Length: 189
Image (cartoon, rainbow, N blue to C red; front, top):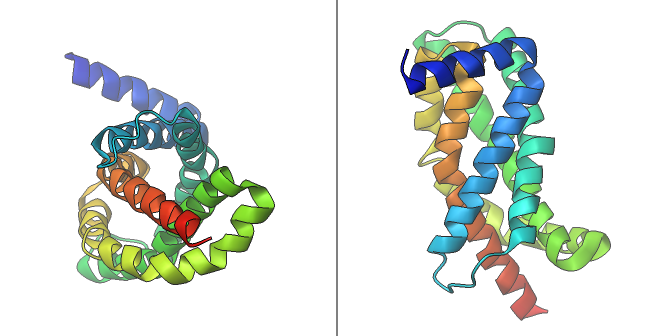
């Protein structure tokens, strides 16, 4: 068994023993790695913001991992199957609800990081009005394709890993958007 096979077997064992924890830790690692990559790619060359990376990892660990775990259990129970109709319906539900919710949490966490709990939450409605539609439109160019692939051809228990792999690229984009929007909110205040 090669390295990929051994990693897959180890992941499968942990997924069987502790699915929620495994998926949450995988999301935390993916989010953190994505944020580190986004910071290195940022046009302002601001360097390394470890607090931002920690916040991003916490979003993966405490929100995205558990939320995705429970959402996928619910949506695959509510809409079983891998046929075209069920795949399209699951994709539609995810794009209408789950995606925008993740984006709002992500933006809110960045605002709280920069402005404290009260200051960040007071800025959240404005941030949502300012950036959610643009970010959501971008999501609609990426996530439906990920959904179609995952819901039609990936075993349900492995879908979170598929999403985490796709999320690596998406979180880089979202991190860059969130930090740009936070800078704009700072400039406007």
